[in-house]
Image (tube, rainbow, N blue to C red):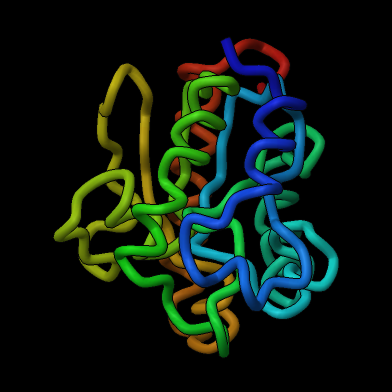
Length: 189
């Protein structure tokens, strides 16, 4: 049986792909280890790599604002990524890198046992919902997978680049709030 401490320690020593060679810090995850809501991004950016925490740069500030819109904050969710080390130049993580890291995310999900998983962007949606996922067509749609409710919305970085997508993301957030009220314990209402 895993524990958070054992998993973090094991993950910190990971050398399964070449991303470990260029990382400053492993970006394991952050938030409540008892959260019913898991947010999954794609991989660490420069600021995350330097600090060892997901979503701490401009995209992280926007994510905090997005959570605040639906009466949440980082203390009430858990945030992780599909890969734990920064891809060079902030490129998308390769399939081989995601495959090498998948066990870590799967074990985080098993420990957390969230009721809701929100994929932040197409990379995590392709990994957790459907390999053929199209974020522009399928964001905001709820899926039942392995006894959990999953939904994808735009990655905060994409919303920083394309302001026209923000109204769609806001609708996704409203849907998330409704789903939280339907499936999570009263602490989230």
